Image (cartoon, rainbow, N blue to C red; front, side, top):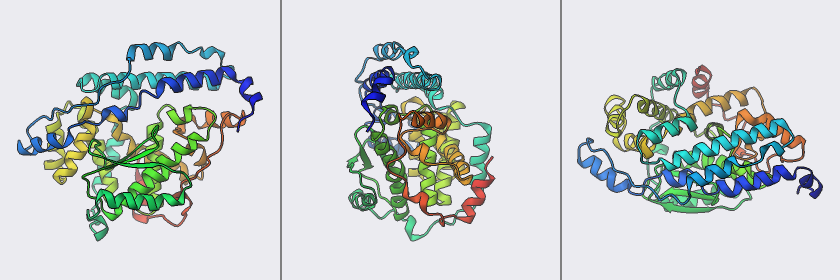
Length: 386
């Protein structure tokens, strides 16, 4: 617990942090970006022999964007005396404002795409080269563990059992309106699973280490922080958080070349947006040129084309590369597990800890403790990335 005296000393900071928390609760992007009619549009797309442009529907926006922007920019940041922390909060306001613009323009074609670019960027030439380098390797991952044999109900039982290694409690719900096989809703402390999805044993291990071992760990570490920015997210936290999550897959021994290729196909698909590809063009690229199985090609295409062009998915591979290199040099992983943190702001987090305004992580990803989980083949690939 933080002392009353310390709160009093930094009252302006706590007031601004609380104000931002009230505002940002309304803008969890993932609550708005997942289409409501995925299955019916998928059927129509397949029936058209992959020539139909899906017409996705999205949840209604529950906030007034203009009013929210005004409230964000009315914060009296000059009252935060410590310059490093004041600059952090400036960056945070720009970040959250960008997310409002993303949500406001969902399903408005290129308008959404350009807002997504501003928030999440797009693959660099280096990122594309890395993705194509990974795709050159021969895949030998077709074991029994890769067969989709488990229902969503069986997955629930698996995740409940896995979560016993951590002493935090979260909800698990089934949904037909998510584009991923699983995702964490941070504010609701809920793990959503796709109801009609069949999971392989490997995918269950991957998702458990990814979603629970990192995303839930950082969700509950953030709850233990005096400041709400740890829950709501630092700028560019997506790249670091997804990097940590895939690194957890690697350290637990369940990351496969097949999974690395999936992340590479996402980079290729996101790059197709900048070239102006339509939904069917991107699908055609993955299905006919790269010979991906049609459901996988559809899932990746959906992820990047939802909303009008969602560029976030290229960050998984670059995030993994950055976290892998960072951890390999024996750097401190605890600091970026403290909440929805990012590598770029680790010094600001250390500063907050020195000031008594942030705690070290209450929970630690158990996969990171498995020092013997290195895979020589994957090590070679990850070390060769530019």
